Image (cartoon, rainbow over all chains, first blue to last red; front, side, top):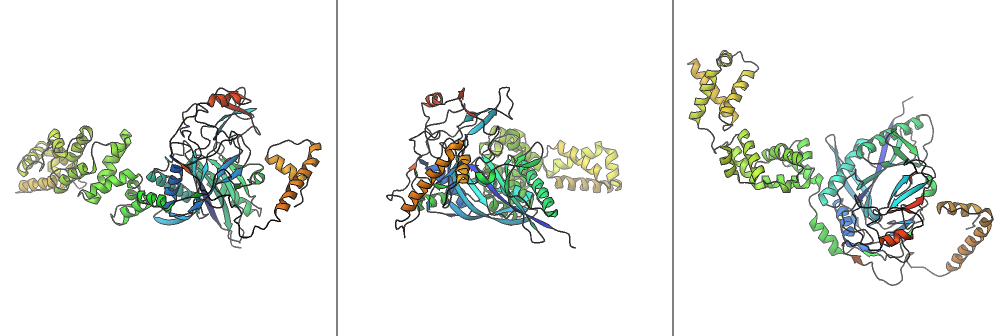
Length: 492
Length: 103
């Protein structure tokens, strides 16, 4: 009998907190992290009788922006529904969400994994309000078995966009790449800070197994995955658990399971099938929303090139390595900076190398954004022009860049300050330095002379000494050629 | 649709309400009355009308994204049956977090 084989089927629901100043249906500030509990609340988001919702235009625009970038179709008429469930994090006892007519449907987004591109279809994007936060406490401060919970409604009503994928992801790694691409996208679009740690990007995962004998296990929803690592671990655990059950000929129970990060297992949440009875009905306090064509077109015009397009462009048109294409398209400002360095005349590969090593290093070390740097793309391009002409060595150029970054001065001034001259050392003085260094290091020179320096280590050592002497003001290949010339002259 | 005791207990559970045993039977009758009323409404001819047609044709107005603080938060807190500092305080449900919040 053929052994059974399995295919993993994963669909993700990503909740993204939208970067608005005020909440989705009231004017309360959205800043809930670090705020005193229940400061940013009002009758509407506390669910007090008689209060009415009022839709935030910016939240609608940000939702449209994300939807357009995901190639979704926008529903020109959309509406909100009430999703009913009773829990104290929801002051109204319902969440205002969208149901049968979401803001947008039918999009797609590529992900990159192991050198391949895979297109993932997006089912829908809808808007909804976030819930409040509960803190479970006991008299002695323990969390479990608490008699009371404390409620903070600062987060209640913060706008969320929920992005639902088709069940087309086939491994935890693909799920990870998908979430990373969503995060990159919302950051490109400035729709959200996309920070999983602080909860502005949250993921629920649906996972099932397709068995080679034709059985298809029920879908299980995993909640409480608060980091990418937790999501991957939870999906790996669930894959093994579900396959084990199917191998034993057992059924998979369709249910919601909670990831326990400490124990590394998922656990069934009781009573889920009943809680799924959300009794959706149209929100009577909000008329239908017309998503006007002018709004959509204005948003469309403001869209930057999405991260996957930048990455493909760097790989295909610029011929950068896959790793460089990925790292240089991670952040929109860095990608645009690089494009502008090239647009200012620098060679693409050289610009990519310098941005990747020198600019990214400074950004990492200082925590600055690329826009805060004292050197703009034109500045870097003018420095690279010297390197390209051979009038500045790489080493000298790095010193000059350091000065430019520190002092915010133009390349010519920085070169003066660094004590280097365009054109570097003359051939004559280079010859003098080479002859001097070779003379001072007779033992190493002898090995070069006799051809015994097969590893090239001695040559490197001597070259380093020469470079130091001339403060890097010559191209390494020129120095090497000069060493050969001096050796030839010795041979007579 | 016939309503029975099971339906009433199901709805009560969703609403997290305790119903005294002697209140169940009257509840079944209330439910039946209410649903009976909808049966009457169903006699209206609604052909060609959108299921969620709204009265009037007005559209949802949009608000500018300008944050404003509400100045009566403390009053709202003071009205709460239970509170601790600036927190509202509620009996814990099942002693733990909601497994189903925000799906």
